[in-house]
Image (cartoon, rainbow, N blue to C red):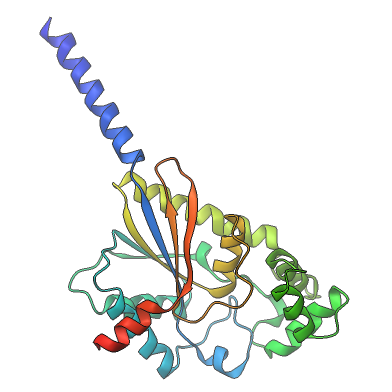
Length: 253
């Protein structure tokens, strides 16, 4: 008689532990990498890469200081050098950190043949594909809500005559799938805060996929965007493009 009771207790305990792990809640801290040489010189930087500038290094260190009191159960980064370096600089302020996990899926949107070229040339070409005269006109249409981020990314890809750039559905699916898995892993581990260092357009695309379309200007370097993942597996965007952690860290340095 004791054996069936013991087995029943084991099954109940296992179920309770499973339910508890999936009931955990997760806060995702998305960070755009620090300023790079291509950022400063106005060159296209999607899958192409360039080093952080001295100011980019200082800002990433300040962000790390500002986030020092925020515990992270996991740290993820795009596999590009600028994102990896930013993540490592953020973690310098800590005595102990989780392992840094790199993911190709967290990369910036790919801009195909435009990579490394002058940014203005790419944006002017993209504007032309949607019947607008210039980069400025396209950005005005985006800021005014006349063009969505999906429209913008598709225009950039359509302008690539080599057909190597990512269209919105491709980039969005890649990023959403990666973040879904990161959130679920964190939930299975008991929940908590997760740091994800990625890229400006990539984070904006992801926000749009999560139903947040109010971000109508480029994210600032080293800004924090916080998204809550609840026990039911729903996302809620709580804070976007915030540099208060950088400012806090600059004061504490």
